Amino acid sequence: MNKQNSEVMRTAREGKHPILPFEAETLRTQCKTYSTDRKNLLRSGTGACGGLGRDLGDDGWGYSGELALKQDAECSGFLAEQKKRTAYDSVIFMPTGTDKEVGLGSLCAIEIHAPSGEILDWYSVFFTGRVVTLPDYITELLPPQGDCSVVTFESPVGQAIFGTTLGGTVRMQGGDNLVKVVRIESPLADFYADQQQLA
Image 1 (cartoon, one colour):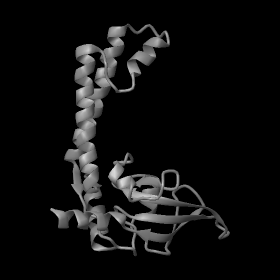
Image 2 (cartoon, one colour; image 1 turned 30 degrees about the horizontal axis):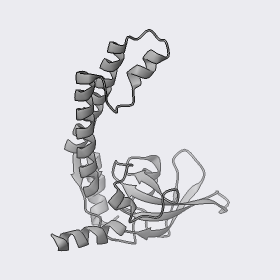
Image 3 (tube, rainbow, N blue to C red; image 1 turned 120 degrees about the vertical axis):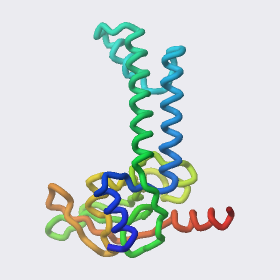
Image 4 (cartoon, rainbow, N blue to C red; image 1 turned 90 degrees about the vertical axis):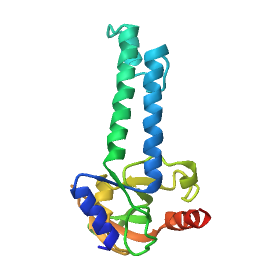
């Protein structure tokens, strides 16, 4: 395992969250959104938390409108605190640009193989730390939506393929199928290098 991937693993063992630079920005934005949403709900009864309390009230479970709004506000407050804790417990890693080993910021092509060796399926996956909602400037660097899935470091697929070398094969947890990494690219490495040159 390369030096940065070893650092990522050590960070995770210490209970922290390895993330990419854009993920820190996304977490801050989400935290502000949920905090603002909570304030709006408490003040005027409007917000974008998803209407959890209102949905329960509308289904005839006996919730009053006031209680439903309070539940929505609590939902937004909980989500804001969760994002804040995640951001606080995160360590930012720059993508390395390696095409030899899967790491944060890797864009990979993977094949799913049956134990017999038959190829069952293939996917393009983009590897992040925790965030699955990508900003537009990142999605522009990736294959079109529908052709590429986001995989986080903490997901089962992420745990299986993290640190796998090009051409390497790993077994998925709880199954007989194998995952083979057939291509590794690092579109973010060039992006961040260009950003640093412009700064």
